[in-house]
Length: 261
Length: 328
Ligand SMILES: Cc1cc2nc3c(=O)[nH]c(=O)nc-3n(C[C@H](O)[C@H](O)[C@H](O)COP(=O)(O)OP(=O)(O)OC[C@H]3O[C@@H](n4cnc5c(N)ncnc54)[C@H](O)[C@@H]3O)c2cc1C
Image 1 (cartoon, rainbow over the protein chains, first blue to last red):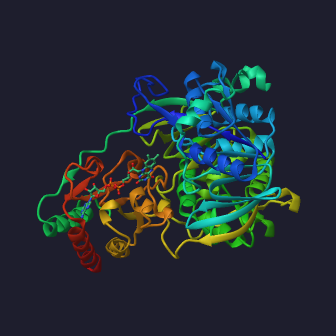
Image 2 (image 1 turned 120 degrees about the vertical axis):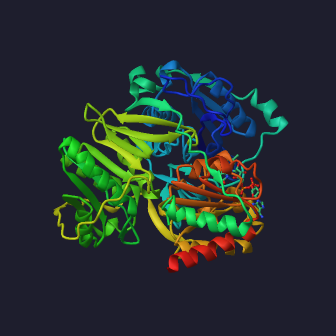
Image 3 (image 1 turned 90 degrees about the vertical axis):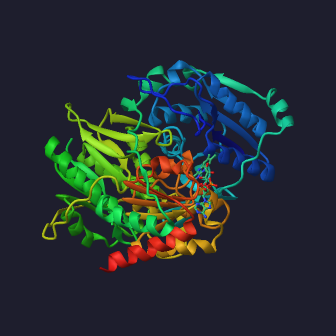
């Protein structure tokens, strides 16, 4: 089974976000980057399937030079090889442009199953996996917490409001992964040593038959007008007193001042 | 190109709340763009709901009624919606940011080759008569404004953020029946089963009031005091990841970055420290109350009202007080 996993490098959630006036992206100064946590579930699931059924796991990431670190981490976890869409032309895109590039890269590979995170925790678009499936002409199941492969098909549990759906799709298919699917492993020291020797190919638009105009910022269908810090919440107030008095007072304030009850 | 379309998502045969919120926003957009508001209704045996949609402001309801649309599948639903869009060329197409909306909207956008603004918390019309959408990014630590280059301008809208409209019980829509040409081979995704989690709860993402508990709850049984407060307030119960990871609550209750993004009028956080990842899910709540025994807990930085104290004392008193207030 040939499994492809989409991997994105994102700022660690604990990172302090700073936006310089007039900019439409956050400042990269002092930011630590990690593999998108949902993509870790995707990598882990791919490795478990490979361990159970045999096969090969290929990672693809679109991103600046530094994104190669995320791919090395995935290789150290146990993936076999990686492709890095690394060219200025790929950068600054929206979910559409990113999906176009990733789908073109996947078309160049053998792929029986494609796994990715349900969303990136940077832009929270929750679009890329679904769009890649459409562009490849294969079905998808999104927000999956359990996955079983049977011959030629996948049975996936997908999270919905108030419960879950059990959905069956023929392979190849795209599965977007949610917390609960598995517990991602850490890369072992041995894995980290081995990862250095595993193939990590940098690719340009021409390598995936993309024109510079259809990927990255030029290919985006959304335009960012502005980025800013959200307004601070008005300073709250600690209501003093013993539990009895404080609780009574807050209940009154919620009705008379905040008017939410 | 004309028309502001809202996808009329149903859950258990009922129109979900955010549809009214979107149609109400649609009325404002309609006045500025000079285009009509319409709803797109898909399902099986659902025609009677068209009137409700008219009451929410839809002048036209595009209705696709077919046994193959009984359960949501991205294959069937996207095909019907895309066919309708190609035929009528709306300039705007909005979905709720629900499990279905988050699945269907990008599928439709990809088929049409257009942009999509996800999980938007605001929409305005600019001087060029383009819709400008506001959306939180980086765990709500920054906000961006975006517009779509092409039509239809597509977005998913976060529930509970845009104000709902008054219902007009007398309104009746023009119903445009859409032909449904679906064959079995069009539907590759098959829903085998729907497993409901423990029954009848209010959906967190749509709740007006949420009472949430964290690690400070100490155990699963102690959540009873949270449930009691929630009952009195008609609220949904939420939990921090720590409470979920400990196995005290189901993952469906988790609020935060890896859980649900919620937007109630009132969020009462009990024994929750207020980590960045938890805040990412609830920071846009209109009023936040925090009960925590640690005066340094970061939750107090976002709380409108804080009580420093033992939640096992404070919460039951709040329950009692609300009960007598609401009984009056
Ligand atoms: C990638 C990633 C994603 C994450 N996603 C989420 C997410 O979606 N949602 C989420 O919530 N977290 C998430 N987390 C975890 C998050 O970082 C915190 O660990 C978690 O939110 C802590 O939960 P808590 O506030 O309940 O527990 P704690 O931080 O342990 O806080 C417990 C609080 O209870 C108070 N307390 C204890 N006893 C009492 C009492 N008797 N009376 C009053 N107060 C009391 C304490 O003072 C303390 O402030 C994520 C973390 C990572 C790394």
